[in-house]
Amino acid sequence: MCKIDGSELVLDPTGQPAEIVPASGAGTRVVGGLGGKRIGIVDNRMTGMRPLAGAIERALVAEFEVASVDHWEVPHSIAPDPEVLATIAESCDAAILGLGNCGACTTWECRVSAELRRRIPTLDVVTEPFVGVARAAFRGLGLPDQPLAVLATSAESATAGKLEGFAASVARECAASLVEGVE
Amino acid sequence: VRLDSAQLHAPTELDDFNGWALERGWGDGLPLVPPTEGRVTEMVAGAGRPAEELIAIVEPRRGMATVEKIAINAVMAGCRRDYMPVLVAAVEALVDPAVNHEGIQSTTNPGGPMLIVNGPVRDRIGLAYGPDALGPGNRANQTIGRALRLVMRNVGGGVPPADQSIQGSPWKLGMVVAEHEDASPWAPLHVDRGFGAEESVVTVVNSESVINVPAAYPEADDVLSELARALGQGLNVHTSRGVLPLGLNVGHARLLADAGYSKAEVRYELFERAKVPLSALPASGNMPMSVWTLDGNRVLVTRSPEDVLLFVFGGDTPYHSLCFGGWGVGGAASRAVTEL
Image 1 (cartoon, rainbow over the protein chains, first blue to last red):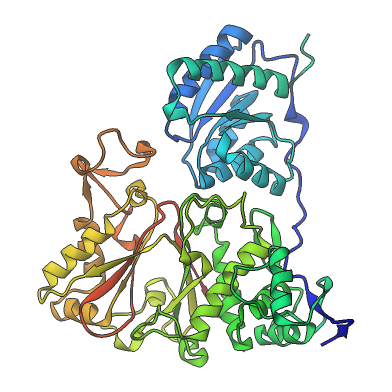
Image 2: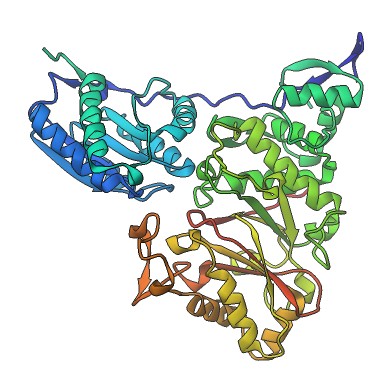
């Protein structure tokens, strides 16, 4: 035991992070704007996501004239089928994921998002209490700047008007964070 | 043994060291043993594997759990060096995708990983499996579980805000139990899971709580019904996707075996009887209701009878068995213990 001036040397118990291969690739932006693009909404089936997904679709179609909005369902809080993710990445130009409204479901939403980001840009919808866990997850995944759309209230308790308003803001966030070359 | 970790000057007085360590977020609130080079070197030797060997990457920080890092946390938790093979196997099992440790580290739920140990290593390191096995007083049970939790915290970064547990739980300090194999009338858990009877094995599964099932009935049928009622408790099991650990006391196991039930038949009976009528659940649905698995108008609590993780420990009075509340989104993983 080595003692120096009333102290002894101890070993650091924290682990160094393993090397991260950032998920961001060529497909981190939709070039030229959302108009005419195919947008995927990836619904983890958390309560409130289904009406929110519908509202986001209406906003995307009305405001940005997207070509199509496809809805996909994945399980919450566990790993989804990789083939489903491959199909989403293949068939969509960008994806919006939600709903991060608990700890494990937010973690897995982030992990799915990072996987999709190898091919296409993504935006994640989380409720305000779970922004911290989303940020921690994305830091670990090498994506500290992943865009989040934050819902200040829980989706299941939001009024229809608030939901529509938030959906419109998600669509605008989608355009702002995922698009380059917008005139 | 060549150690790689950064060395820091820490106070020599134990109280001062513990305050210093807690300020760095290293601890769980209980006193820690200072991980000096000498102690860590001894602990690494107990593993019988190179200090630099990478055992697991622990989320969400993606921390590298090398033998050395596991050993440092084992020292802090108060382990003996001969516990290391069990702890290393537990870390390996923890990161098996079936367990969903990514979810455990961040869930709003209160649980933590439970380790069930089988095989000769139980007696070699003195794990408790008889009366009061889950209670305090046994160093191996208490410190191995604690060390795993310290690895999750210090190496994996499983602390707020990544850890979203709403109320927490004493389970998060660690939980280890061994199976009372000699007293069980059936094959032990690790044999059910494909290992040889003479192998030493650690099984890791997330557990939410403990539900006491006081079933002091003389008839096997009544005992099964009470056990099944406990298995069906709680929202999580209604996702039909996890495993349900059930620790039968020796007396209940013998009573059921004497009534002619094999272990597989007990699992089947529990699986069938634990199905929850839809009418008993809130009309507004589950969260999220789409993951229910229905058998007619009843919700399954697991996908199959094999997902009832049945093992035997404790005393032989057929009164209290323990249902370890299922998390609903995690399974179990087992790893052989490589002993020196």
